[in-house]
Length: 553
Image 1 (cartoon, rainbow, N blue to C red):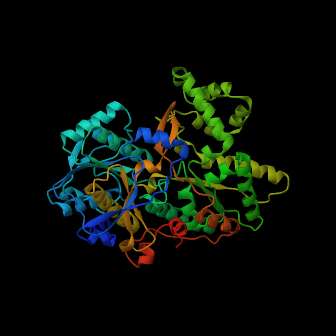
Image 2: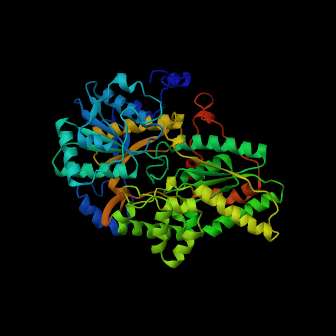
Image 3: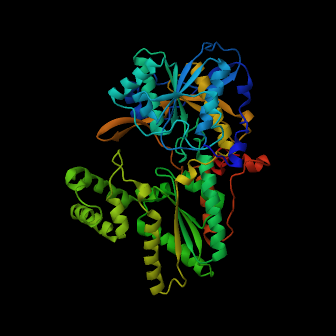
């Protein structure tokens, strides 16, 4: 970038805080007992798919003498999937650790994500390059991509690229699908007899890549702080103008961690949690009824305004709509070219409606026409409806307005309903990382290097005790295979990392459930403000509220 803001320039000077053990010249490893987290029904299948990777222990790094690799290494790195704040610091931590172990080591960045490995597109990351990106947001140092490495041809091409570059190791920075790639590559390289270590790093702003060993994925902290600033601003505006209900959709297709964290940060009047909707088998009309009742109760106090948080993936968690989407998917898949030839809009809606079962047809017809059209749009490469393009917030607005009209006619509701809609998505992915993410990501990169030096292939970097000071964090790793289950995708059984959804029995959700009724009637919003990089640690370095609740802080 030719021109930098003052903050951009200042962030280069930030020195990430790291676990104390990283300051020691030599580390050793200690195996830890690992409870099998994969479903029992999938264990035999996973053993067959990963005979060389299955049933390994988790490890942590400890002080002590260790016989580590001293030769110069050539290591490749891939940024995979959507951007998340801190990715550049993972690369910086990896680069610095490699150079500390041996100044002659080289770091190769594959351009455009996993396809760069398959197609042999790469660039060497030197200090001149890496130094331009320290503590900054984005993935633009080498770019990213969403290619899945799963076919025999892709695996063999990846192997050939690694062989041609004489790679000693490969680091895959990504989410669940990306780290599934890493596990498959690790197993394939072992079977080929290649002495190449493959290591993963947990990234996703959605927060759904976590378990006992991975307390949070990187990028979640920054993204939720960005969204919470915007929501807090809207909360203050709502209380100032006193005339709008704000329906705010947030990223989070499979899990509602973002919505839950932003609820704690801002205390909106309503925060919907997709996992609860599914567990309680709530219908669309029940959800709308809950919203309308809250609006009516606040109107009775003379407060015709409020804030509602909606997870991006909510629509797929409503049982009746989930079934409807599955039926539409089947209709589109069966029709093939016939459906693809139809123009968007009325033609597609009519085609779908004519083939739906009666009950689903009635539900489809009851939806706003714009939502019907969006449900009929093209599917993503995995055959899924593109939920980020479905305006769930507008669906809820229109149906809530209908419900309030009915309540007004019955004399139940006496108020005025006006609204604004918002969708916060990409705004949170490439921000300057918070100090927490800057520290955590740099440490993850350093941790990945230690996994490489100990030749722990098929592991993902895992740093625990994250609610403590960084010097007390506990670096280590966990086998990626131990995080997997078998899912049916595209007619085949596939190994995938199981997404971590909001635990309705967990401390965080229970804490939320205990206060949400109070929030519904209150206008005492919490205003977190913007991310702070300079000042007291309580302001600059505080981890996510969810993380603090889950880790008993």
